[in-house]
Length: 223
Image (cartoon, rainbow, N blue to C red; front, side, top):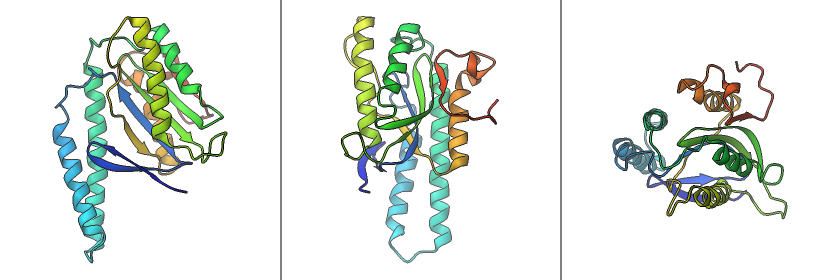
């Protein structure tokens, strides 16, 4: 199946139909513009090194060490990103307010069964986490790409929320943080991270008490 190339943090990313993803995005004012520039620069440098050595006769252990460092930096980036989101208290709107949260819930489920399978999502005051799988093809037989799903969800939710809130301009940050789900363990961790985000933020004691959280699959080991 053909892969589709996009750019995030100046890095090319390839999205493929039939793939599961963990996605995070935020309100446009939730993260200071240069707050994560060190992580972004390091990720870009590591990526360029990996590409430089990938097709050359270099020690496999060295190349793998670069990949391990790259993946570790991405994890640290997400943690720093999430920590900044929880620290920010005065956003342009409150996404977890019932009216806004309902709009997002409808957006997350709009393509359910047609182009995506939902696993879990949570809606916080200034950002969302979403775990989903895109289908190989849509109802018309066309390949399904995450970027197209995100553009649809973000555009439609932004249009309605900004109208209700009486806002002008953008609602969302342009980019989203997304990572491909590698295996069942990674899927478990992504879902666990998503549904327990309000618990981590000290908003509730149990994940199921947060109205903006929904788990779509049976995950009995999560408590």
